[in-house]
Amino acid sequence: DVKVTQSSRYLVKRTGEKVFLECVQDMDHENMFWYRQDPGLGLRLIYFSYDVKMKEKGDIPEGYSVSREKKERFSLILESASTNQTSMYLCASSLSEDSNQPQHFGDGTRLSIL
Amino acid sequence: AQSVTQLDSQVPVFEEAPVELRCNYSSSVSVYLFWYVQYPNQGLQLLLKYLSGSTLVESINGFEAEFNKSQTSFHLRKPSVHISDTAEYFCAVSKHQNFGNEKLTFGTGTRLTIIP
Image (cartoon, rainbow over all chains, first blue to last red; front, side):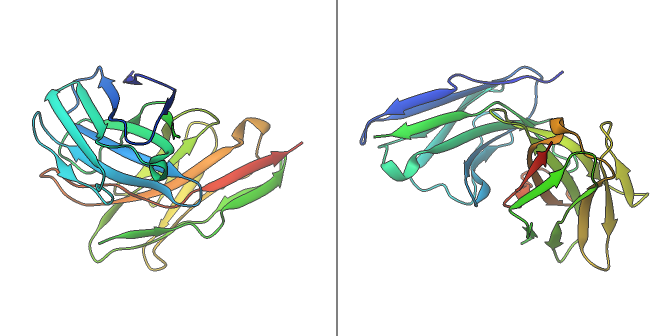
């Protein structure tokens, strides 16, 4: 079974801090994704990566950056956290370039910015 | 670009009653369709998917969905719900593509609440 592990379930940070959210998958998947989930808005894609050191902007990349130095790890970085970045963050991975492959999700990180 | 509409944000249903969660999509090209389920305090899990072939697809826990190309719909149904089906359900679509960097587009979700 695929396991996607997010380093923290809950995180509280202050405005202006640099925040790192970590995600690791154990099935050698090429693709990895970061979403944020907000009530009434569903999931919105922040960034994704289809190979090591590759990244592409999703629908809402402003205020975020990502890093993928190793295939199994995909980090989301909030350069200077703001209160409007309080949200649930979900990481996902998928097997290959075919768009018919399902995504496998971690349990999420609930981030609060004070 | 494709889009997904889930018109019902919340659906309350009595236990053992049938349920239908609606999903409509728009796309100018062929698509793959997915339903994901999110149980409380968990990430999303794949429930079922339509890739090609038979338009009726089923999950292992009794849900089914039917792809209707003319109505651009992929509604999710279950003939008799259980308390354990309480969750949020997301419909998603991706374009047919075999060369990477294709995204899933999610609907806004439907929260299914089962009433004992």
